[in-house]
Image (cartoon, rainbow over all chains, first blue to last red; front, side, top):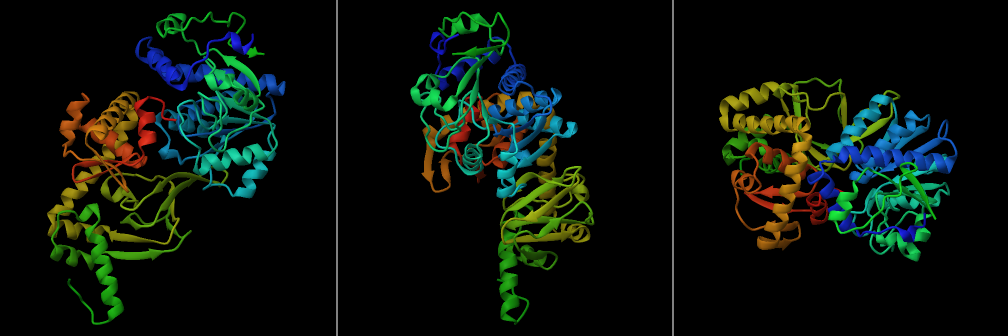
Amino acid sequence: MALDRLPAVTGAQMREIDRRATDEFMISVGQMMELAAAGVRAAANAELNSIDGRRIRILAGPGHNGASGLVAARQLANAGGLVDVLLTRPIWQLNTEARHHVATLMSMGVQLCVVPWDIEATKLDTALRDSDLIVDALLGYSAKGAPHGAVADVIKRANDCGRPLLSVDLPSGMDPDTGLAVGEAISARATAIIALPKTGLLSDAGRQRAGSLYLVDIGLPGALFHRQGIEFEQPFGGGPLLRLS
Amino acid sequence: MVTHSADPSATSAISEKLGLLHELDLFRGLTDADIAAIGHATTMTHCSPGQLLLSPDDPVERIHIVKKGRVRVYRLTPDGKQLTLDIYEPGTILGDMRMLGQDRLPEAYAEAIDAGVICTIGQDELGRLIELHPTIGLNVIRHLATRLHGAERELEAMAYQRVGQRLARKLIDLGQRFGVKSVRGTIIDARLTQQELADMIGTTRETLAHTIGDFRRRGLLSTRQQRVVIRDAERLLEVARGGDG
């Protein structure tokens, strides 16, 4: 399916869709995250041809995008991936959802470390270079302004390492509405769009930055989109992951 | 100012200690004379960057209070790597909480990030101080209650998230109506008790206290004399929108 045949939403509209999902349709954030992560896993499989035995680094930010990355870490490890996680904020400063998934990953023996405190810059660069795939779950559609601190540093190093990057929903640092980078921004090989494309992905700058596109079904009902004023014939009859052209 | 030595450097050290003690929560509400007496029962230690302050092997009969500088708290993963749990700012009690009835930092290490000052009190000294100055006992109870609420918060995470969102929205509203810009952030220039604020967002005072404590720990706000200071308006907005990044 072509990207321009899909309705696109701004960050504000997507926030409202998420709110309706939880408040009006009783779909929990956890449910949506599991499905988003399954889509990321399927997109990773499509990019790598196989996950089994492949070295995959998850870059996880402090919010819901990062928490989805942590769920994806579990699912990718379950699928045989050699997964480790780079967090950009200390464990106790993550939101409740993310802390929950960190605890699961620790129980599984998945390696986690907090940038910059737990890993030297040179070792971070080596780890990034030694990856078959890097999953960018740093910032989601709610993030505003230029990335700063550890997030900005990790974005720069991930771009410089030359390894393929798969972004969750949109490349971190890209404005969801305009597609422009307001500071450091990920240049992805592929992006797994969650639910609906954000308007920025339709711009030339956004498309260039996002690479190949996949659309992930997170189970939002048509009635929700209708209530939001979006006419959307859901294209997921063949499965929950759709490659866009 | 009470002095106990003719040695100018010793006098200066005691003055510094008394000044620092005055600012610690545990000693809130005490007179200058009380503080001077307590000064002799506590140890004020200057630490250098990287210095280990706490380890699981330490004796349990002391607590430490971060007065100046930041402290990194971490645990060791099964393969011996460090995983950062939190970065403590001045004012945090980081000692082993077993002497206060809680085990706050299981298997945790703490090391100084910056050159800083740590105030240390032994169990016996603390007992004697509470006998002499019941206000300290009340402050300890207040401290423990806050910690207990923190533990309960983990158990009611989902309910908390909704309260957090409502609180963030209310603070943004109050900030727009009563906000005064300052170098530390936006001061909400309206004296509100926690009960009044809890009533405004339809929750209990206890749940509000958990939520404010969590916001404070995450650097979203600070509180001073019944006034809230919004420290990070951008991230508070994320919470209000239910995204959190």
